[in-house]
Image 1 (cartoon, protein in one colour):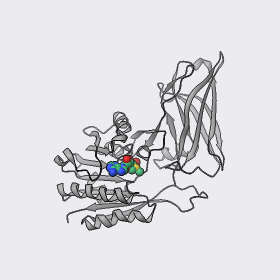
Image 2: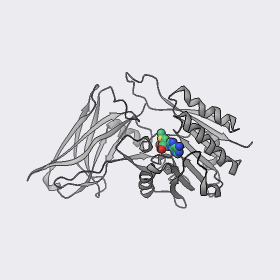
Image 3: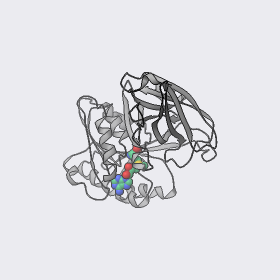
Image 4: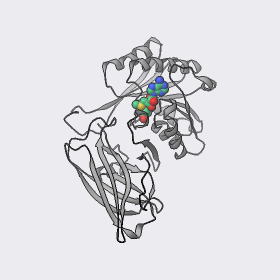
Length: 336
Ligand SMILES: C[S@@+](CC[C@H](N)C(=O)[O-])C[C@H]1O[C@@H](n2cnc3c(N)ncnc32)[C@H](O)[C@@H]1O
């Protein structure tokens, strides 16, 4: 299972003297839902990075995360000459840095605090930024809130399926019309907008819209792409989305509640009625048997699996998780 560095308390300037400045924060290494802590030792790196001078590291320190810990205190002292600088606190590991350098999913995802100025009592906002390396030089920068809402957490999805790859790589001049349902913080649709010319609509419930908008604002879609967000509750009708014949619908980690799964299928059926050639890409992490409700309803509604695959995730063996995790992925289609 992929683990995440998280801020339990975002950085703040704890003390400023004539010679030194002390910056403190509290962090943890947890699973995606934040419900379990990493139960093995790992050396993390906390560093103060200048937000304006392209990554200048002002101070770096190693913090040991030990099996059994639920929180790690971070206290960094830096030289008082840095007062007034606009900085981030970056939490990472050496392996994370190497994984990004080779475009791989890291076993531990790093965390960037929001920017704060080094001055008395300054505190970073309760946000965390993830900077994920995509193919080529593109980087997806995604904000999450530091609370526990799953609408704002990141789930990794890769794409090994030939039919989907063909849609994404054929006829690159054509703008793909893409809708993401249950987009959360928008990582999947935003990553796609940075890789392929497309018109992408990221949708989710009302309370995910602020974080979605922040991520739309700092995304860097390829030239000719458009990216917007809007509210779409499953099973509540398509509203003005009915006016677009989408080519692709993205469903990433939206199957975890049998009641909402039925509504989700209703929405996917309505979308496929608009375009029989629509492909629906579903990426799914199995959590309980009731997850099958989604697949049964897809079948009842004559949405067929035309391709399937599995994506192995990096895995750290722990007491609570000794099965190597995987993402199952499916491409569905309504027509022949
Ligand atoms: C586990 S998150 C996945 C987020 C995102 N797709 C990803 O992979 O990063 C599930 C998302 O489904 C959304 N969701 C749950 N029920 C919904 C509903 N009835 N209508 C619309 N979105 C819903 C949640 O708000 C949440 O953002």
